[in-house]
Image (cartoon, rainbow over all chains, first blue to last red; front, side):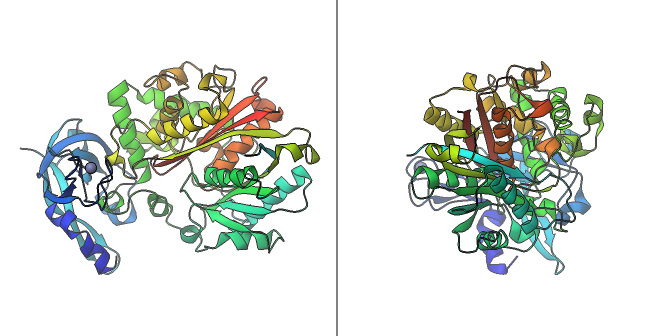
Length: 130
Length: 382
Ligand SMILES: [Zn+2]
């Protein structure tokens, strides 16, 4: 993807930055211009805790082209203590280890190598809490 | 608003149609609808299409399709709402006729998925690119996350999911337009290859080509074109959070429920008034969630109702008599209009071996993405 498109996402992807609505307290990931709950304009940046629990999960067997080498891999919706929910891969475990309510840490990882140029794209993955 | 009727319907078979292009599929469906009504002109055309741009590199479908129908000059534009594009096109056409702006309007849907495109990648553009697709999720993956949540919340089983596919293939075997006309067994479904756990290949709708079109006009003029007009009693649409992670309950399709409530209210009807329905079973779990959001069953009971045969032809509320997306096929932009055509055939009494006895009121539910948009229509024999 063009560099500016990637750069724009860096605060969310590298620093796990979300948004908190100063009016109603709603937390989103990533941040937004307008609060989806009360439509207040201007969310405040908030660093999310680097851990959470699994809300629901799957294992991807038929993967998109960029991820084919990694399949099968588990993915989950993870909720942080702030109430933000993230779609992430679950790494460093067997697919069968992922369960509802599993406590996970969110770790900075390489997400994909993009296209022929091989640009490395980063973000967070969940790993079972130790 | 004026009352609106469907007076003509046409569709191609669904399947891997290597000899037909995107425009051919539209023209075949549109000519079918015009001939069915004996109409020789149109006041406007709506083309439901998810991704001509990515599937075959073709945008600007409004004029392209009008031109190839021999109707260059007629107002014509594309309507996009991912897999709900067809339902959205029908809704747009409905309002154009209901408003009094036009009398003869074609609502169509078309998709050419088998022309070499990376189908998984194209379909994934209906999810949130930055927060979902970036991390490696696929469409079956999103519905697998919904399925896992539904199983945990309501005790839905793998047998429940498989029963949806078995039932829809049994229906589709009776539909000459269906892509897959073979029945499948519970064991075959449960033994098919894993796509995104717990969803297997035979829980997933196929990659399809196809076109579908219906002709709308004011109800008061309908008898000029047909002696069996089908009135559109209501249209309802709703949206939800785009990303699955942003929905309060991943096991509940709230956009479907909201669209249904709006349609029920507009029609002044309730779920028990519906005789037959086509719902958006892109994956087996989607049919179960749709049944609950449409209030055809209590929340969490759709799997049980399916296994008990309540949703089969001859059951309490026959669902997807066409074979559904699973068996009939799912050319994404065409699906919403094809659903309406199945209901038109049912209400006209022309559904042959699939006919639901005395069907007078029918419903269609079409859905985009992982349920971020949904369109519901209610139809009545008049
Ligand atoms: Zn707020």
